[in-house]
Image 1 (cartoon, rainbow, N blue to C red):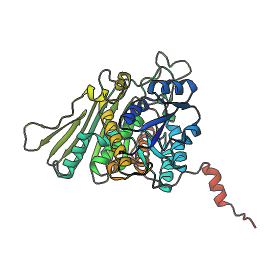
Image 2 (cartoon, rainbow, N blue to C red):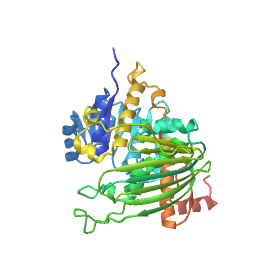
Image 3 (cartoon, rainbow, N blue to C red):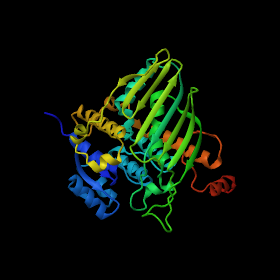
Image 4 (cartoon, helix red, strand yellow):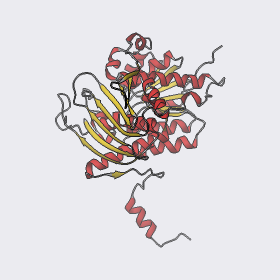
Length: 395
């Protein structure tokens, strides 16, 4: 008899949660509790996704007797405190991206995951599980394109603002193309190449500052266009363009060029071309099968909000999470092998450090080095410096 999978509590009312809950249910998890910022939002989510218990109090989900796993996708500034607290009371954590508005938020999550290493603590970077990108990674390791010299990424999408001002509109709260899409791209480039950024150069722009519903004293500060360059640790360079001003269908292209050829993932399909070939070859075809997606119970409205490659990757990731729990008889027990390729909190800290460096580069208009700091910054550096210089002692 198949063991009962752990119960899940979800935090947030975003499209990612509305996508994740049906997938988890289809995979055999029971989603037992939901948290929303307001009573209205929490109730609406619970009714829409058929969840028995809803609340606006974080502790009521974390302490729910049937919740063993928490899935978080809410305002980024809340994600780190929820994740750290959940790990502290023995809950497994699946966290949506971005991890937080700044690297210090991701670092809090890293410290909590290190303190409780037996608990699952993963980022929902679904692109790592997209079959086309996994095939690309294997081909790169096998030398299909030789030495990886250049990475080019283009992401085109339309406006992502809701009818009211929320965290997506505010740069300081973690909104913007760089945080939402850039964090996934930075992670997947390291996943594919095995290299990390050493220095970055970026430019962020906010062209849409007000909309028909967001106006008056409110102004959008999050970037809707972003272009950045990365120098990676083994000499590879990457150029990424995130354009949120393009009407029409979502488009994503990830191109890697080496001294023997090239590989490119367009959407969810993989193409390759050797130097000696005249035209490219289709190496992996992953058609959009709406019936397959519908079998997971994901609504049409959510499918319009979440790009197909990200949705396909998230489905594969949750299937891997199910397998990780399913291989152990104990209800909360799990094995690492099925989710070995998933992004950890350590990975999210690196990504957030790169994102912060790109923001600094845009403001300073110069190249900025990527330095991973393992300690949180002093809350009051001026006071701290004064204390270090003081000569008094306590007797």
